[in-house]
Length: 174
Image 1 (cartoon, helix red, strand yellow):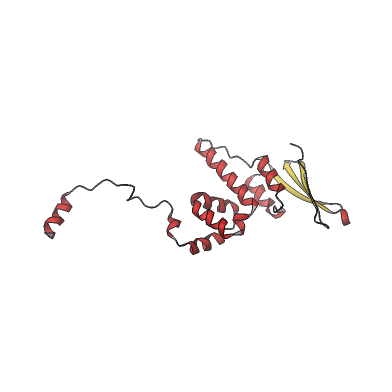
Image 2 (cartoon, one colour; image 1 turned 120 degrees about the vertical axis):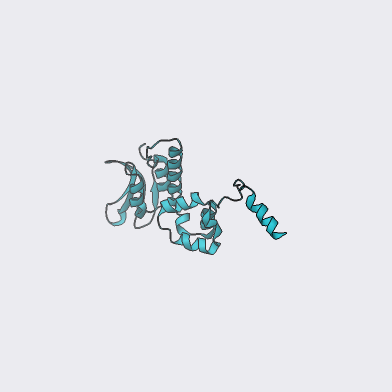
């Protein structure tokens, strides 16, 4: 009967928690995909895009497949590499903050989609080693030059003639 069953249930000791009882680790996974996209459209920092993608890989894939500009930008790949290195270093128990590698910055500069207006973000996350841009010459020879900078020294990586749009890439000093 109901009363006996209730009394018996109350007298039993509580059972141990199981994985089925655990709360979900991906709280955003409970939301519909349309709302995910709305959230991701509002993420405007590449570091945050990378953090979202690592925290919830489904969100990162959704953003990539949906064509969200920030997640397709070559700087997103740089942010992902930086965050993965930071997590790896932290997992080793080290507090050393690594900057972007020279190879990562060279790869970014070699991408035709890379833009100089991203240099402030790069300088913020990697102040010791960053990219700079300057305009040289005048008229038909006017060109934008990108350099890989370590302090005052800078190796030329890219030259774009502003009038024709022609671009040349250089290995620069290592």
